[in-house]
Length: 214
Length: 312
Figure 1 (cartoon, each protein chain N blue to C red):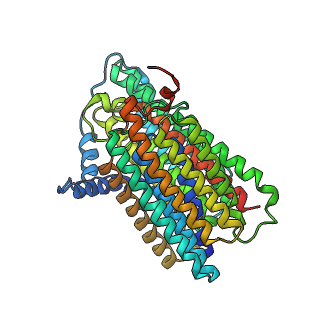
Figure 2: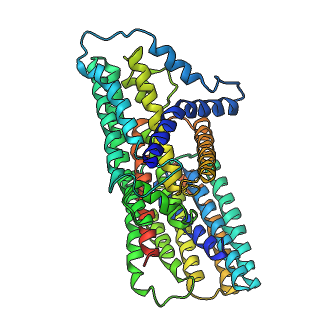
Figure 3: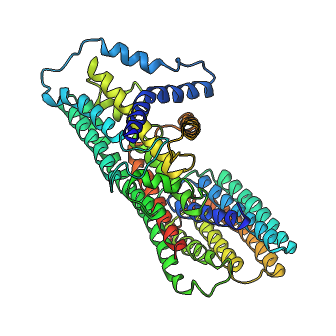
């Protein structure tokens, strides 16, 4: 199997994981989906670096794996253990319906990029996967009530932007490093805020945070 | 002429190997749990023992109770005539025989569910309604799987599809999603963990076993054989259509032998994966089944979209 085929295989795997993770309700399962997605992404970037003969792309690949695959999930696991929550109790959309919506979002993404199929570069066919990730991340942020799942949705959006950047333009090391460290600090800040919210309101269900008084 | 003989040989192989397949799955499970387990041929001994025992039929039962075991076995043997095992020839089968296979399996489900209701016991009704619920969730995924097979191989005939998928790359992105989806369908249709526990003795956790709770003797032997052949038919469809490769298309004996060995190895790997899954997970609650069904439908849908895009 050539490198191009391995990259296509990993992209299909990323798409499958993203779509299926719309249906998961247990929090560590969703964090594990995030780990799988980020690891597969960093592998794709590493393979691209190998195929295009640009060894400097290995640095963003390794950093992506380190931060999005190891550090941020570690922060999230610690938050989950500290808050003693295991699963998301209420969501606005049921599991089968949200998976179906994930499928429809895949269709929308592929349909919308159909018209530009001829103008993209070699890896331009991965642009629909990027748009799918962004749309599914937005969907997760909107339909979940636990703040942690909303953060995971945000990270999925960031992964989608990363794929879009990888598939269309060249990668700028400075921008990549900046974005990754910003995400890491964001995750740590989210962990601290969730801990405080839980201490004050005894719940991290964001639908209950809209009342002004108890 | 000799091609029709090959069909008979393949069907006999499927029907004959089915209890051995179930035995292998049980043996792997026992090994994973650190036990010695029942002998590999145990299911053959069970069927032989049951064939010699008498039947007890409830006074409230109608003709459906005696008709169901026969219909189950006959339907699944008819379905296995169309399934490519280790030899394919495009002349065998006909256009759309996948739909016939699915409908024959649906006939089995229909009669099993009715026979569960027939003996007027509450467990039969509960098992029948759960079985219908679960298969209703898996049906759209199966038909989407048929669409996927057609799009991937360009053929509507099971034999030609297997022949054409023999040479296509199995690690293409669309086939991951379809592999995952059909694996879920295999578990849902054949009452394995995590959908249904085939070894439970607690009636409230049974689905398939509850429907056949009232059977004894010869009827039970036929139904057990039909269930195991159904599992092997689904497994064969899985390894030949969704993980292609290794099927012989010509009649030379060396090629046929290699194809047979490759098929047996693939089935063995699938038995191992099934047993690992059975040891690892517990049975899901019934109200989580729609989630599993939705996962199968969505994955198959994603596979079809990926295929349509890569074809242009």
